[in-house]
Length: 199
Image 1 (spheres, one colour):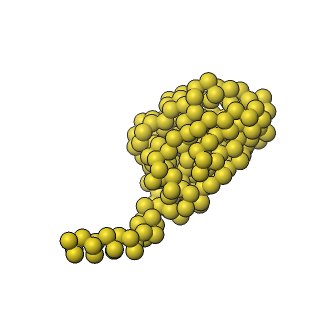
Image 2: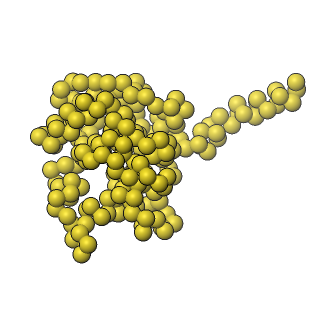
Image 3: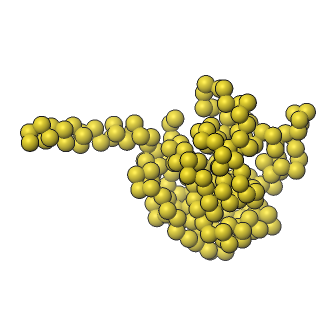
């Protein structure tokens, strides 16, 4: 999947303060038969966004025009359950470029990094404060600096460092997937193999 370079992102946020949101809630299993990664965003949180009759659920945050942005601020243990990569495809296709939580399921985190979606872990108390701030003022922005690995809540100035796999960081900064990365260092690989033959 082609990826955008991720350097600095400043955006408003969409709050989803629910804990233990699993991949089946993110993208229900009945929508996994598609052969293309595009279009999954239409069914992101499908059973929460729509009623059984197919009408929009006005109580769900994605249907609330007050909240928008490229950052999803989730609750603890986001992305648990099955290992389906489609969950990340749905979040990315909807338009989110980062997900913030106090804890992610390992497989979800790896799938996110492999597909250009930045998962950011912040302390639980800061996450709670951010959720409250967004609900009170939907225009509140966060500033994400991937190169320096900092996450800042713009209105309050609170800033924390976040961790990321160095290799995946390099890929995201360059907008590269694993194959793109290997092609970018093709000459180094050829040189290494030729040197091995001489030994």
